[in-house]
Image (cartoon, rainbow over the protein chains, first blue to last red):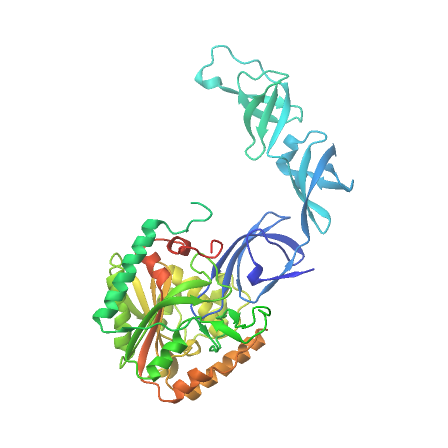
Length: 189
Length: 324
């Protein structure tokens, strides 16, 4: 695999350290007047989602990581396994419940998501920024809204629950921001 | 901000203009001669970590890659020292300098250097001139503290930089996230940049003197009694979290100059970079009898940053890299 030298270091670079993939989320160039350049970097482990800081000196190298992001379609869930399919290669990728994490709340059959592959194997996925989900169950909105029942819990087709405005009814389609887990708006039409 | 416009605002350009006038007046009052030396030179002094940009001085427009390699100066030092060796007494220059591979919030490959030399200055009087310039141009930063490199390390890291072992230095460097630095000189530089500089009081200007021997560049070295270790007669000014200036009791020994050039070439080659031919004009100037003097190189853009409170070099330059 290729290597990067410090002159190529920058935010977003994907590197491999001890076999694990990292993303350089920060890289600050520091150079004393007559000394060697220093690169203060913060790296995020793409598998474990932990970060660490490391300062490299000019001339150091890091191994490039074989990390790519691909569009995948959510096919189905089987217990602890979530199965996605690469739309171009038709290859299937399995992710565990731990890797999918909170995203299970948004996954509808056929939904197009982004998967991160390391050496061809899936290590993480992300749903689109907004998803539209059908309300399967909720209590009818209280008449004469008071300050205490402005929102209510609403259950959607994936089985997840979201806090929504009191006027939302069963059968409505709501838009959720997957980055915050918050209600955005009711989808018309 | 448009894509074609400068990154410094017009107000900042006016501020920079006023600071330029102030600096010129400072040197006028002290009877310095303002000189203009070339940006391009056929020769360069080998430095371990400074990289000059190369230019092909072609003459046939149909063959623009054929011709001798010349260098854009990393500082006007060589030419100005040739003037001193030829009788110039007190000279200063505000000019553009170039350093390849240096880009960051405080760095741009092309930057403005204020550099001056005065014959007859000793280490103390030469340093005082820098202190006076800082006091005049940075009125908000009232206090200028003078401290030795050793005292600074002792104050911030609790260790004597001249006598600490490489292992002790590595242990402290480890806490700064440093793993790959293993020689004494580089460790001290790295600790200075990552542990000490950020700890300096931004409200004060600090002038650090007497650097470790390995960082002498073209400065003289001296023995510190009674401890028995050598220091480089070099001083550096910091303000507002920025390294502003480097000053030296200039080396006058031409054989020492040659020796350092060759050592630096060897070190460069060891790191996979090319060495340079001995700068013959410069060496001839040193051999002819170089006068005792102190020289200072100051990053003028950084002085503007410190005086105006800007955190990024881009906001004091018209067209930094990316906009040039």
